[in-house]
Image 1 (spheres, rainbow, N blue to C red):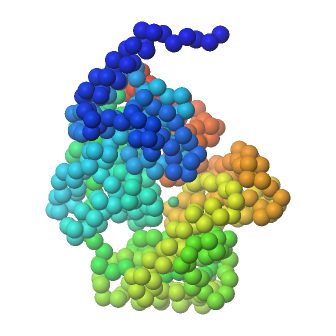
Image 2 (cartoon, rainbow, N blue to C red):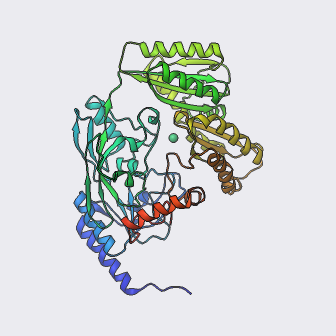
Image 3 (cartoon, rainbow, N blue to C red):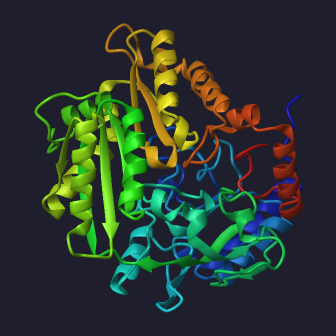
Length: 482
Ligand code: ZN
């Protein structure tokens, strides 16, 4: 039996949309197909949705009024920042009758307190703008990731973004001191406190960090700033295996006073793809090696001691056999070129046919085991598969991707095997007490995996929080679970 739409409900929905339009005005309202298009699809093209309108409030008060109207009429809302999610978290479903609520117009840096080392920002500030503002004040805002020219702080917080600075400075969660959140019913929670110490009951901001817009909309945040490093040293070491990378990390941490700010591993296949497909990339070594370790150290000395320390550690590691060859960047440009090798792997994978991607974490001590065991399992499952493992080894976070074999498979045939690869890789992750989503979140793509791997009690607790804060279920429906 098909359910016919209720004419009264359709009229009510139209009336609410008209009210929202009046409220935000022309600047804050998009309902043309062309205007909405960039808000309704994901960059990789995996998801495309629909919406009645894209609404861009010009102030927090306006955003609150919009949510109050939506909640009153049970009109669903998909909050959206820079729309750089890769897991389908920030776009609506294919048959969606609600609105996309964009934070793009809330883009003011409200305050910078150099003594407190904090910056208070609107949720719609672009990450790169925040980094620049910190830099202008001789401070560092350390969150750093590929999408930083487009992604917004509110989205970074809603997904607890990771990136390449986590080893030294932590995830987004560790960089937030306070939040301002608009709740689904339109109430505004002002938790914009810039305190390093605050033990006054539950830490409410943590409910919203990583919640992927399912509990409310982040409107503003107080962010932590750090001293700007005076010296940066970047190096690439060729290592025999990931075990050697982990031993090198321990030594570097000990010998450089915790100066390791970036520590990214690349297997040979990963680097080979970056070299073959991305113009301007060059292999710094004459010989082929099984594995490569990108190292970045930062410090305050500016006297060359960091570099001298790194040289000493690398020399000893070469004598011990943990490093086979190494280059240290002589200039900023050379340092950037080394980073580019790592950063172009994802893009390079596109030139090698279909790829299935996993963003997983295990305890740092298990990373080498994980790469070895999971690679063997995937190669046994599909002979000729190309495992592309790289990433934030110092955080225990590996991007464990795989490209279709060079011959014998179609694109769609390989992609159809994704559930089988997920089970193989995620079972190994679960055995090692790891996580099936380290830094990209759950969104749509990993809902089934979350339900499979998280304990029922944990899922119950998450649902209890959702039911309490969003009893009508209007916030980003169908994401994470449900
Ligand atoms: Zn990453």
